[in-house]
Length: 293
Ligand code: FAD
Image (cartoon, rainbow, N blue to C red):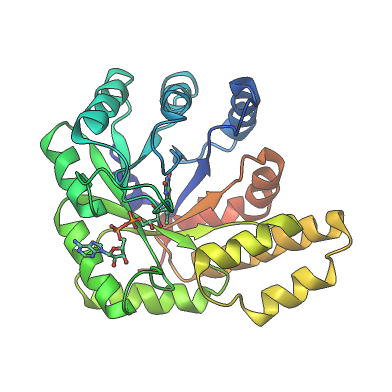
C-alpha cells in the first residue's frame, strides 16, 4: 500500500535509523532493526550522509533489509547537494532493484570547504528529477522553527509549497521540543495550501552529548521546560535517559490527541528507547483509526 494511503487510515508511527559510523559492522544495525520489527512501524527511513558517497552501499543494504527481510516499507534518504544526476540515477536504480519505492529527497547540509556539484541546488530540483526518472513516492523535510538559511518562516513555507507542488507526497518535520511551534507551523502550511500529510519528528534525548548537537540542528533556543529537566539530571545518565523518554512520550500524547498525521521517531538506533516509547503510547496509535480531523 502507498504510504499516502496509510495516512488516510490512521495516525502513522515510523522510525528513522542511520548506517553505523566508522568501522561499526552492519550486523549491529541489523540486530537493532530486528528488535524494532515487533513494533510493526508503518515505515522505517534510513539516512544517507551529506557527502552522499561514503555510506551509499550501507544505506542501500539497510533499506533492502527493511523492505525485503522485515517486510516493512523502507524510505531511503538521498541528499542531492554533493551528487551528480548520474550518481542519483545510480542510487535510484539500486533502490528500484530492491523494490524500495519511497525516497526522502533532501538538499543536504553544506560541508564547509566542499563545493557542491551543482546538479541539485535545492530539494525541489531533486524531487523533479526523481519523479521524471522512476516510479517513486517522494517525501520531503520541513522545519517547524524555520530552516536556518531561510529569511523567515513565510519564505520557507513558500519554498516548501514549491517542493510539494513538484511531487512531494508527504513531509517529515525537523525535531522540535515545543509542540506549540509545530501546531503554529502546520496551521501556516495549511493556509499556504500545503495539504499533504505532515509527520512530527520527535527525538528522545537520552544523553548529555545530544543536547549541544540538538541546539545546533534546531537553530533556535531550546524550551525552558526541556532545559530544566535535562540540566537537573546531567550527572545521572540513567535518570537523564528516563527523563528524555518521558519528555518524548509527553510530546507524542499531546500530538496524537491533537490529530497529528504521524509521528516519526528519530531512534538514534536505540531500539530499547523506541520500545519503551511504543509501550507507553501504542494504545493511542491503535485508537487512531477514529482520529480527529
Ligand atoms: P530545501 O528544501 O532545499 O531547503 C533548504 C533551504 O533552501 C531552505 O532555507 C529553503 O527555504 C530554501 N529553498 C528551498 N527551495 C528553494 C528554491 N527553489 N530557491 C531558493 N531557496 C530555496 N541530511 C542529509 O545529508 N542526509 C539525510 O539523510 C538527512 N535526513 C533528514 C531528514 C529529515 C526529516 C530532516 C528534517 C532533515 C534531514 N537532513 C538530512 C538534513 C537536510 O539535508 C538539511 O536540513 C538541509 O539543510 C536542508 O535540506 P532540505 O531538503 O530541507 O532543503
